Image (cartoon, rainbow, N blue to C red; front, side, top):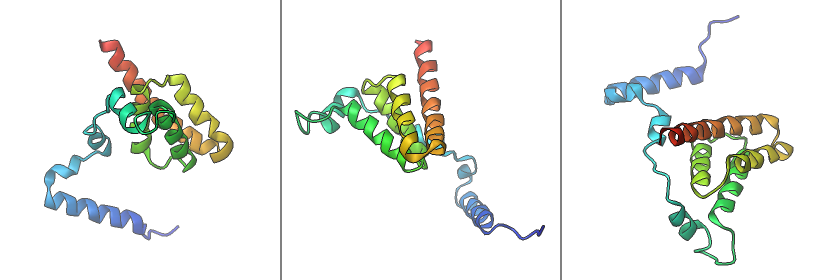
Length: 137
């Protein structure tokens, strides 16, 4: 085996060092922490913006979000932040945990089991978090 450093690791290490030099607070930056800055839109706003407010005979916000979740899964579940935010919004729009799981599971037929598993892991994070918040009330 050789001790040649991985170019990607070197680039990431250099970027981290630059970020620390410019702003020491970035040393502990977490993408999940940044994600928490985005609020979940109220169901009524989603319905007005993405649901029947656009086309009164069209899809409701919940269905649109489930379709979005299916698409994100089909893309290989590469966008963890987008998947978690879509699940959060789908729950707010009235989707059940079973509907979310079924939407992701259905994509195994088209995107493959690795994509489905990855998307399901991200969805579970949000659903577990939502369950904990619900039990605190």
